[in-house]
Image 1: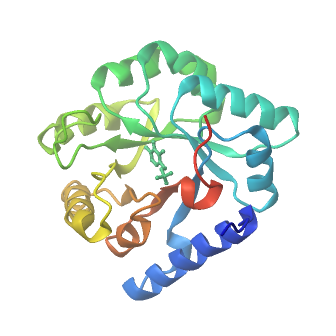
Image 2: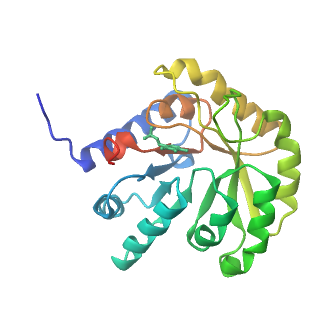
Length: 230
Ligand SMILES: *Cc1c(COP(=O)(O)O)cnc(C)c1O
């Protein structure tokens, strides 16, 4: 059996699930920003997203965000690009001018690089950023350990190039969202302990649970765009 689910149907379903999760948690849906993760998707998918009112889009690789942003702007579109993957320092120069928010700040050296490249976007004001935390201590994941948050936060806070929004995490891949609830809760508690309100957490498999635990930004790819291409 094959059914063609349209982009609009999937997006509506995700928005409905966000609304339901907010209702469960007694939250206003306006406090949750949906970032559509367009990685591996063709430029037409970005056009469709923007046409559907999905203006916050995420990419995790420098070259991809540059290409997507160029294609979008050639088509007269101006989505807000969220950079959500590990950012190498030698890519800061390319990504900085076109990034709306950085979700993956993970080292003091990256902060220093952003400061050096700052002229490229000075007019746009400081770069909104989230500190990426590897809450579950997974070996292959980027992000700092919870114990490293104070030092990174101090450096980011005093940088004129950055505007700290909060914390971000990528939960372990378990296939069971309930299992990752404690990870989201731990990120929220860590943010609260540092007086931060922004929480970028929750992906296709677990965004409703992330919202119940306080997510202010969810980064959803496959549930909106379908399976990844290429
Ligand atoms: C790919 C990606 C997402 C979206 O993943 P889905 O499972 O497709 O929703 C979210 N956050 C980050 C950091 C990603 O790399």
